[in-house]
Each structure stands twice: as structure tokens, then as C-alpha cells.
Length: 443
Image (tube, rainbow, N blue to C red):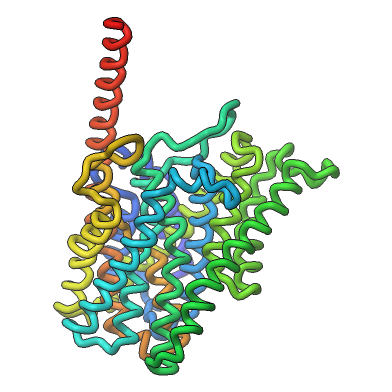
């Protein structure tokens, strides 16, 4: 590909990134679907000659690029959530109940389901099976914009909260489970490098499952509080960047939170999300949060554009060469069976809602829309750098296929399903209002 053609392709791709969200808003087609499709078409031409597409030879580049995309998305997600979550206020944890159930019940069930299918049916080594479960378990904050909250509501005098329970549940799950998948990725690495033994249990549970999570969250809260103090309450006018609307603080925050979390040996992904949530809790209704979210969202869109185009090109340039029936079955089984069942069990989707929260239909939708994406690619690249047996061509093909299948399946269904659920909720609210009005008149 000549340098001139690179500019042509890059310009066209950027134009797509600008116009697609609004252009496709009324259609059952998502921006990721179009970008992957464009990449696949480019892969069939002579344009991408010389691009570094081999995941084995370019593992480190893939790891760091996808890592950046995820942390940018996590900052945007943390700033977008209106519902407060305060560590010391237990009452604020209760409205997050569906999120905790998806994380504490649904996610381990999904990991166990994929791992068991990979080990027992596909014949994978135990370490590879556990890794596949951990890699494919988290829902993605990058590619799930069609089913997530739109952004922070600011400029209101009262305490803001989420109005759409379904979008809030899917957004908060995506924000938290990227970091919570890491313990299982590390478990696969430990099994591959040290072998399976009871001696691994205390180390894995004490440090990787509990310690690194606590450290990551604590680091994020610390960075978020320091930056919030400087931005909103510093005695120095030059440091109160919120007054000037300097929204690039979002980039400083995500890099600082991730760096502090990782240096402290915690999970950096959790640190970024915790930092964003903590920063948002300060002056919650301030317009500055919307400005910061806008910066993170635009950067995420550009980075995602690049990754999806390269992924599409790779699909038609050899990424799926090692894909077989086992990989197809595991990927589709996760999307259509394992995740929906695990989510339904964790949310009690067969029961009607007894009060405020998710309705029965919304529970099934939350169980189904477990979008897989860029985070899965990052985890696989990271694990492959720690143990060679965890970076096989078959694993790359299976994960790549699952991500793309999720992009198309969930992308096609997101618009009609979310629209239908929105109409049902509006109708229910109107009926409830009519019933209250009738009761007042009769009384």
C-alpha cells in the first residue's frame, strides 16, 4: 500500500466514523458492523499489502493498541453513568443489584461454561480452556454503545440518576467486568507456567482474585479524588480546570489511573473505571463531566475505527485459517446459549418484576446482550505474551470469529429490541399514571 493510498483509505474511514452513528441510528445496522465489513472488503484487495496482520508476529502491538482502546472506553463509561456508587454508603449499592448479580453469578457461569466446553468437548488443554472462558466472558464497553447509556446528564439542580434500567445494567456490567475477567486469565497463565496444584489456590485467591481487585479499585478512587479536588476545589485558580472547561483532563485521568493501578500491582482497568466514577461523584451535575465524556468518546471512536478496520482486513487475510467446527460451536454457543442462560439465571429472568428495576423483558434482554469485543483480543494477546501455549492460531481464530459474530448478531438485534423494550416501558408508565389518576378521582 503506497503512502498516498493510506491517506485515501484513512480519510474515507474517518468520514465513516463521523457519519455512521447518525446515519444508522434508525436502522438495524451498527457502526462496528459496517467498519468490520469495510475492513473485510479491503482485505480482499491489494491495498493492505505489507500490513502487520499476523497476531503471532505482532502480539505486542495488538496488546498495547487494544489496551489503550479499552481504557479510553472505560473512562467514557465511568463518566457516562449517572447513578451514584459510594463505597461508604451501602444504600447506594442496592440500585446496582442487577449488575452485581451479572458479575457475581452470570460471569463465573459463563467462564465455567466456555471452559468446560473447551476442555471436555473440544479437547483443549486445561490452561487454554480456562483462558478461553476468561477471554470471552467479559462484555465489552467498546462495541456495546447501541445498548449503553448515552452520556452524563448535567446542569440539573437535583441528584441525577439513571432512567433506563436496562441500559444502565449493561453499561455498568461492561465497565466492571473487564477488570474482573483478569483473575481467570491469570489462572490460565499460572496453570500453563506452573502446572495445576493445590499450592496455586492461596496465591490465586488471595492475590489475583482479591488483592489485585482491591488495589485497583483503591488506586482509581485515590486518583479520582485527587483530580476532582484539583479540578473543582483547588485554591489555585490555575488548577481549577473545570472552570476553564479544559476537557483534556479526561486523558490525563485515564492514563494516570491506569498507570497508578498497574504500578501498585492492581488491575488497571478497574482503576480507570473507579477513577471515572469517583471523579463523576464530585459536583455530579457539573457540565464539565459532559465535556470530559465527549473527549473520551471521540477518542474511543477513532481508536475503535482503526482496530475494527484492521480486524476486518485480518479476517480475509488469514486470521480464520485455523477456525474449525469446535471454534464455531464455542463462539455461537456462547452468544446464543451460555451467556443468555447464565444472565437469565443470575437475574431471575423468568420472574416478573415486583417493584422498580428491570422488567421481565428487560432481564432477558440484559441476559442476551453480552457483546464481545476488543477486550477479548487484549486478554488473549496479554496471555500469549506470558505463555506460548496460550497464543495458538486456533485460539486467535476462535476469539476473532466470536468477536465478529457478536458484532453482527448483537448489532442487528440491538436497535429493534431496544426500541421494543422502550415502547413497552413507556406504555407501562402511562398505564400506571392513568391508574393513579383514576384512583385519585375516585378517592
